[in-house]
Image 1 (cartoon, rainbow, N blue to C red):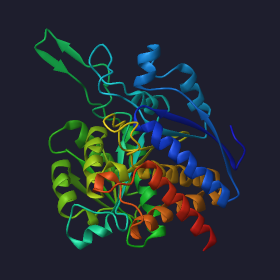
Image 2 (tube, rainbow, N blue to C red):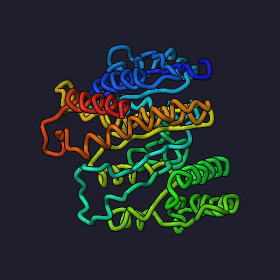
Image 3 (cartoon, one colour):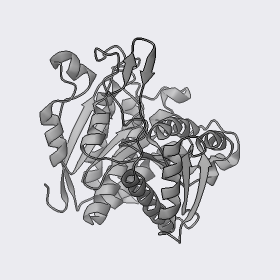
Image 4 (tube, rainbow, N blue to C red):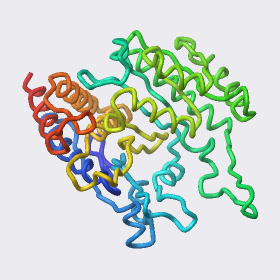
Length: 369
């Protein structure tokens, strides 16, 4: 374990564009550390993913897992390739095993409109989108991952599990997050539970627990919405929401919907956070169709690194890490607000190298300001 302000980071580049955006992110973090003192990052690069499985027969070596267990935080690119699968047809997804092994119960998916980024919603209020989906990441419909069964080629079964412990801790995490967000922005401070409690007994049980936990946070507004209605509302009025805890599978789906609201997966960071460990990664996958072409947008990876620094700073009481996180977010905002780059997915010609260079330059400007 590291000293108070020297952090050991396991780096898992993985597959496809995961490798490219990870390398870009390490370049960015080097620039950040040159401009801000008070902390340091040491990297331990480890193998894992579909390519690793193809070469060795092991998707995530035991040594990689052990390194993750010792690390202060984990920076993750992307894992999985559609043409490389387990014998049962499932894609390679060690990140799910990592969540379970490290008990990363809170899948934090910030959805924030960045100034200057083209948005699909024409309503001017879309520029106010700033919400966080908190996906319970250890149970729900993912609980039976890898354990489903097919009977006589006629029926298939998977199971959903929702526990009191799992519900209480993800709801408490969400309310504490709402408190932090309100401290930074008085307009925030609301938690909306998203479920299907009118159909599933498991979710009616979890919904009951949500209202129990809400009583422990009287200063934070609490409300509820069914998942189908939330899918509608995220298109109609996403600017009205703040923190949204939800079941694992539902969170997986609406996180992608949310990413679409702010310009796509290339703009959407994420963190999988537990009480002792955390993994930070872009919400996108390995994108093999553009891998190796220099087209990948690294912004989601940059913002995931900002989340990592903010988490480290809060966990260890290192203000410099929080400053570094804000530095990255501010640089990204300025690059797009000033229209210095336009990524490929928006019809532009700027790829990984150009976007990285622009954000690194903006970091230097911020330090001088």
